[in-house]
Length: 98
Image: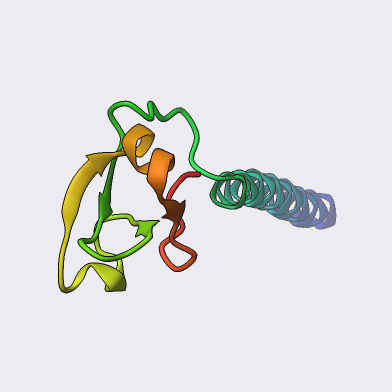
C-alpha cells in the first residue's frame, strides 16, 4: 500500500514538473513573439511599397502623417509615401515610414 501511495505521489510530482516546464516553454515563445513585434515597431514599417503606401499631408504643413494623426484635424490630403518623401519630412508624433 505504501509503495502504491509513493508511486502515486511521485507521478503527481512528475506531472506537475512537466506542466511547469511546458508553461515556461510557452512563456518563452510568447516573449519571443512580443520581442519581434517590438523590434518591428522600433525599426520601422516592413514590407511596404512607397508607391502604394498611403500617407497624408496638410495644406500648410511640412510633414506627412499616418491616418488618425492629431495634426490632420484641419486638413487631410491623401498621397503616397513616395510622393510625400520628395517634399515633406515624417511626422515625429505618428511616425510614418521614412
